Length: 224
Ligand SMILES: [Zn+2]
Image 1 (cartoon, protein in one colour):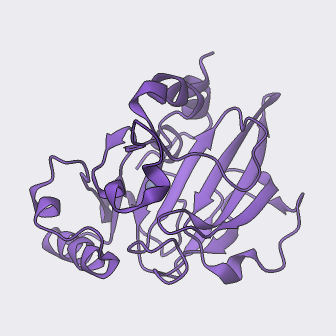
Image 2 (cartoon, rainbow, N blue to C red):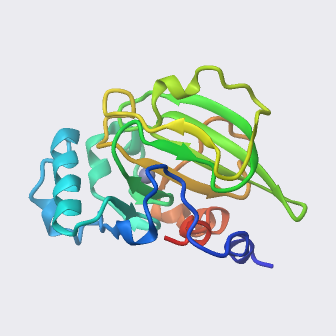
């Protein structure tokens, strides 16, 4: 079975990755590519202005959480040197972002164990990050949770077991999450390529096909 089909087969219905008892209907898709005209008007270097944009977007649609961003070309990464170090920029986002308030609970959508964690504290990076390892039907794969609160990394131990639906962390605020409006970066990863506590979530166009194979759409699992 293709890895993306396998991931899709692991859940049969909407499966939350954030707390707050949001139903599927409380979510609204948000386009953060260069096609989003509201984004073009915004000074993207300001995470506070970005928070206002997200809040207004949700209020106007009577929604409680925004989500999106898989395989999305984003210009907002131009602000950080982290993504602009070579001839070709990293600007295609390969995780799923869920925009909810800071300190919202983060929930394991599948049973797993703590593989690794790290504070990726560069400007524009993930900030505090957790990676879970999962084994289903003899297949081992990983899920990554980025932009968490710093306190979430306290008292963690590699190998800790988490049940499906159990709280694993809390979402960070913009002082600790790499300087973004609060959101979870959630990514499914087949092969971690030896990495610990970190894995690219934004990639170059030249590398995109390989990354999309290794990191299928997380919404195949969450079914928002
Ligand atoms: Zn993200």
